[in-house]
Structures are given as structure tokens and as C-alpha cells.
Image 1 (cartoon, helix red, strand yellow):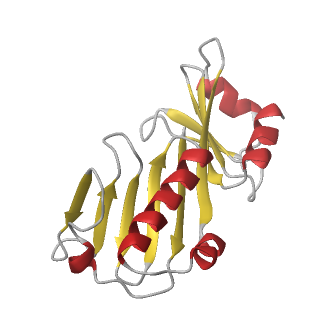
Image 2 (cartoon, rainbow, N blue to C red):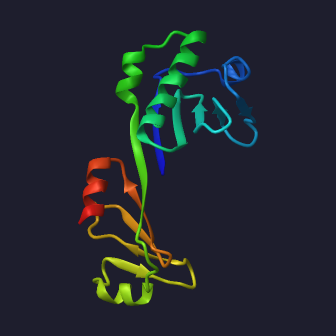
Length: 168
């Protein structure tokens, strides 16, 4: 349901000069509040934060494909204004976090569920958050299990691993 990534164009960028010159639906550059140029290519596209160092973050993609497409769109737009080596940028781009959603067809008793797991693997504090946090091991990310039956997984960047964890 959400994919986050980022990369580096490997050169300093003049964000004030790029602001307004990049072909996008929305741009915001307020360096006194935030050091990044915020971009949206379409009203419902992911958000790109482009920094003067050349590094950038992309958040809000609904899939890895949309994340990569937004990355390519950013590089093409920047390349129209300044020459960058697209092969180097591809090497530097990475998927950083994927959020997956699944759902049981019934409501869950989170207290009872928390009692059935090893305490080291779970955290359930209903007064703080209305979900059960479950981490099978330190390298598996975190499941957020809601009483409605919805289950979110976050903290990993490899979709095959996440799908495997859901099937376990």
C-alpha cells in the first residue's frame, strides 16, 4: 500500500533555480522552513523531496512499479535542465521501505492474540495504539495487527521476503 525509496544524482543542485523550471503539477520550495524542493508530478502521484546535495526521497507510491516510475520521471525532468548520468542515478536509487496490507475476514481479540505469542515478539498497549505489534525476529520488520482483522507490515524493502512472512 506504500513504497518509499530514494537516491542521489551525485551532484549539487541549485534548488532555487530548479524551482519553477521542472515540469510538475506541484512544487514547493521554502528553504527557511525545509531544505528540500517538494515535487508532485500529478495530483495523486508520490511526493519527491529533492535536496541541494542531489539526494532525494520518494514517498507515497502505491507500488514498487510506481516508485520506480516516479524515480525515472524525476531523472528525466532534471536531465532536461542539467546533464546527469542516468546510469549512475539508477545505481544509486533504492527501495527503502514497503508497506503491505492483508486482511482476515473476521474481527480479532488482540489481547488473546498477544497472549498466544512470545512476549519478546509482541507489544500490545491498547491505551497507546489500537493494534498489536508483532516482530517474529529482528530482521523481519513489524506486523501491525488490528482488531478489525487488518494487518499491515512495514520495515522491509524486499517484496518477496514480505510475501513469505505473510504466508508463514
